[in-house]
Image (cartoon, rainbow, N blue to C red; front, top):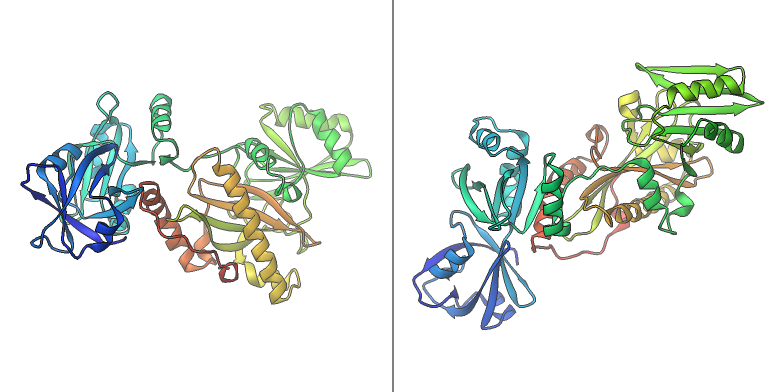
Length: 459
């Protein structure tokens, strides 16, 4: 039920909800006596009918409005779940830690991007959207002090409200506050959780369906580990477990008892040759002092000579709570580089044309591989999502010379970086809306699920 309603206060001695007789969908979906939910507040009501109520209005007795602390300056949607009514959506967005800082931000003529996004996307969600600070959380009384967005005046209204149904974290928070909200809300407190590469590998490795697509990966513990895996695998990558954008990645090569390392430094490709194992180990000792690295087998993705090629698939959680593939691009690394990342000199390319030309695939073969890549990416996102509530991800995936698919990693913080250059225009539009639409789903306002059509996947 996506109809939008105005709430009308009614002077009635009993706690009631009053509908127009033509609002059959609402009347048929519930019992004569039911419970209304608004955020963490709820109250019992009885149904009544009244001809003077308009079809786009819902009457509520004053006692119900007061008990639920319902703001009347916004439009609401109604969701029926288990014969009970949810009025909302009711979404809180955690903007900053300090209430005073938040107050300054909402009163500025030119508002920060986070607040502007709420304004632009309000009509996607309707209901109550609050801008919150950590200081505004009243744990003892289950209330929040913050700012309500009024869509009629396009202004922010300060007030005290019940705990919302969902909180979207958009700022760093003290660990005790984060822990409290996570315990209270569970998966309805969500954000773009970062995850280090080793933890990611451990989680993905638990899913047997993903094992054929995961490169051999080991945790770096001591310098001799590099030598051990070089002798075993021939070529390895050493990656910082918390690195991003391809920074800090080094490629070690062993050939005919000779060793070298390749990496990028200040936008240039560098190579160092070692005359002995001792020299190699001395380099490793000096370079990897923190021990926070993983060692990974090389995947043969230099399909075009000296250019590494991989792909990024854009995923979002939609308003049905399902992972959705919204586009894919190819990335071609700079000549001689060990990484394909755009910030390290790589270039975005159209994924379809690259599969057809460099991999010499037919249209049918390319589509089949695209579908398989999508299935693997979504399985991987679901696995990571078991531990942290995430709503979007950029999945890096590769195709080797034998057309075997490899799952490289998932990027949750900047999943669609530079995607708009060659990706479908609809990808960025969908990605920008995903946070609030997924929050709407978590608030109890899901969109009807549709079977995914893999043949309609975007390039």
